[in-house]
Image (cartoon, rainbow, N blue to C red; front, top):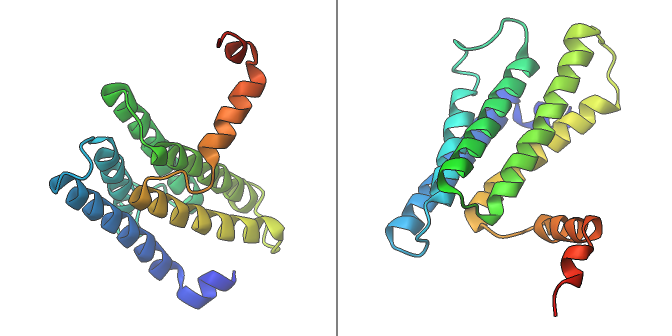
Amino acid sequence: MFLQELFGLFSLSAFFMWGFLMAFFFNIFVYSIGLKKGTTLLFSSFVMMCSYTLSDYFFTWLSFKNSFYLNFALYDIATITALLCLYKIVKKTTPSFLYLVLGLSINTTFFLLMHLDLIIYQNKEHWWLWDAYMYSVNLIDITMIVALIVDRDILGLHKLKNAIRTLLNPSANSRMP
């Protein structure tokens, strides 16, 4: 729990909330000067900014009591749902969309595992899952912020997705002349 001791729980939360807010402001700026004509990135960054602002520690009126990790899992599921509804409406994605949905899905899995470990099983002994949770969730949040700002395939996830799709459906490539 080195990061938590170094920065504190609230300052990391504020940092990520600020990061998504800045990504949203950056996308408003890029859209307003006409560099990006599509609104998908703008809407995606708005959804992420709203999600992280509403799920911040200061807004606990929608939270379940004594279910810290379950609250975050539910917020992430709601955010994924909002992003997928946005996709159904706009019918267009940006490179950052895959990073957002995949990152939120991984974070949700970690939140549910931590809820299971700490609340359901009432484990009090520190073990590797806690460190994996802390570093992974924070790294994924930073990656999502960067993906919203640069809007590029920064980790090669789209190339990996296309390679897997090609491996699973090789007949699609054989039809090409």
